[in-house]
Image (cartoon, rainbow, N blue to C red; front, side, top):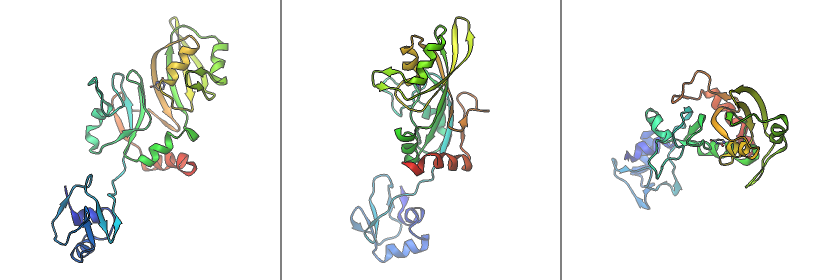
Length: 241
Ligand code: URA
């Protein structure tokens, strides 16, 4: 709950003093009723506030978090099975933030979380999905021809994938470590691509998204993006949606 004049000032209507004058002048309505008294409290998440007939929306400070997600966490905000959630790792953020895209329960690595819906929409828009780089430990040793299929596009149940880049990094016993860069965000995409070439994923980690990587960030830890990172991220996507 927040005092009406404070809410209006935070929403950028005018200074606190002027907002008080607007209230006294009968220009402010809460849920359709004119409010003239000072000190009325409102709930910004449910009450409808208007000034001179114009709807006022709370201006919430935007936060942009880069999390190194551990395995064994869901990226959804609710889980019917009661499994650990990534938001539990962000208790100190003090704001409700949402994942940009998703990572599977068993996948670890880079996840952006934000309360900026417009940027989330743009970042996940199929028109310009930004490149996401994964390190995948796959079962067995895929040969060159199989890896070429990533570049050509693989036929999955939901259609042909866009060309992806793949590099054979090294052998790990009888398995292979691959670097895979995809430009789409389909559900379980990397796992399904690897399965389609006959080399199922054993471990998966997202190590980069566009120009962002996990450098210096331990598993389970997060940091705020810098203002210049936020600017760059928005420039990448917002112009063209
Ligand atoms: N592809 C997958 O298969 N899983 C992820 O979590 C991310 C990409």
